[in-house]
Length: 131
Image (tube, rainbow, N blue to C red; front, side, top):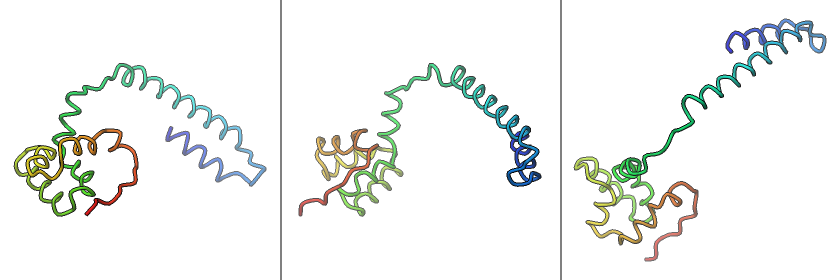
């Protein structure tokens, strides 16, 4: 791929505008590159991607242990609370959700609603909390 790229670059540079005598080598190198890419993608799909499955339990546990989910709670519990919870979760090794519930900053239903994957993975307009 890199050799073909270099060939195309040098041939294009050496040619004269629309009268490029090196167009055949440019086309040949481009077609070889496309063929290499196609074969590489097929090999990756056959030997790596096909058959991959997600271990949902492990992934859920990783998300629950992640301190990063405190960012999603920021609009609901405030920046100061989110910062304190993140620090405590980091130092104690406990989950963010566990600490939020312990401090009664959100109900279990509210927390579950905010931390749903559909909510976390799609942009949404967040309305300010009622005072």
